[in-house]
Length: 175
Ligand code: 5GP
Image (tube, rainbow, N blue to C red):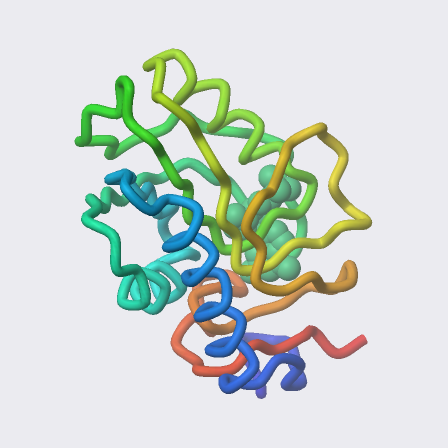
């Protein structure tokens, strides 16, 4: 696949994504039985993952879409912005963050700090993808669909310079 000036090859097919999203949704349904979690989906990258995950969730729940990450082209800029769009009251409530990818973990660490100020009952992170070798902060990523190497990926919501989000499979940058 060609996105802007780069070539990508398919690395995670749709069927494998679907299987892992269902597995994680079942874990959440089991672990949160009897609770009413507030899901916070992080835009833009998690929009497709959130839509697929939520349709497998059988719990009574709320969903809000928030925005925070800053990512420029292929490399994390290291800059983090403020959390915007949180329109749910999360005080004393169980919160589950839905993220597209945890890379260094800085975005999630900053988001956890921000949300904890509102004193939620609990917070868990649910990510589609995790790059374990890049993680450089001490955060607990409780729910993860797929672990991947340190390559740059696009598709299924994730972009390269704002393009390539609208694919069913996930692609890796060709070196
Ligand atoms: P972190 O703060 O964990 O280093 O970076 C998290 C954010 O960086 C993600 O929400 C995502 O927007 C972006 N990101 C990290 N790795 C990739 C990647 O391989 N592809 C794309 N498209 N975005 C990435």
